[in-house]
Image 1 (cartoon, rainbow, N blue to C red):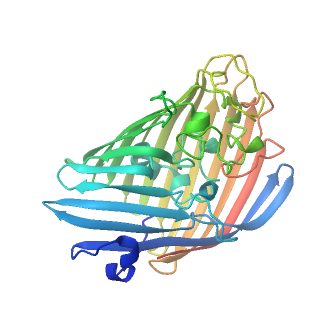
Image 2: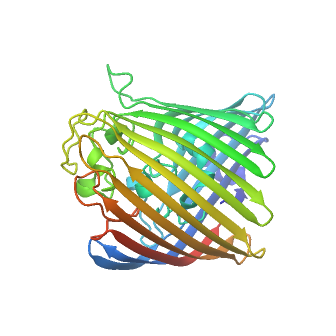
Length: 399
């Protein structure tokens, strides 16, 4: 969803922005979201609490016109929990975004810092979980957000290039520096994506390769020696039983492709992803689930079909079906996950809306930990059974 932004006079916050310029601007923007969440089974018990469907956040976006079609830009975006006022993203002050760069309408944009992947820019719009199905809560993603389309993990220490659109075609490239002395490529991330937009048709495809994902992807920063403290899995490491047993992977590869088409009041979207945890056993994953792998690759194939329908100018109805299959690794069995998302959004104004979203997931087979697969919504603790049901009703306000 696009965020409505309120422009703040640059001179009023000159102490923050530095020397004021006639062609410069700073924009304050954000989202406040609060809802009542019900989950029928969190490790065997029911959960009722306050949560958010869309991630609550506030940010500061700045631009300075340098002349000749060139602009300096920055974006600092903080995530917070509405119920407690606490910081999200593991307690990072600007955990959602923190980058600076140069933008040219002719040559494209280059940014450096903590930011979304090029893959996410090209494919997230096709996923219900990253769109209307509770992107902040995480429940609506493919199993455990294994392909990171919902950006459960940002990319740290990243240099990113986004090309301008050429007849609807654009390209994004990203490289994350590992930051390890004497080991230039340790924890590196290589990411590329291509997008195409032509009237009602939108297409996107991407490729991402990460070394030492236990640290580079799930760590607090690109040169982490420990996983993020905000993860919800066992012992605060890889955040899902669905793939948490693959913490020892030496690398991770994600290929994603999707498309959408607007047909009158309806928008139909499809998304496919292939995620591989490669060279299992290569990384010392301290405090992992304890599953021991001696090489091999675990492969997840996931497909999604979703539909949004604008019943009235104020009322949107939506639904999605997601299937994910884990092929297993090193003679440990495979698992399958089926999920259905249903939602409705009612806009009270351009900035304020009410929502009701439901989720249902079933699991079968043997998961990454070598145990019987259980349902495990992204952003939640796993169920004690092979199914999990949840719903959230709430309100979103954008500023």
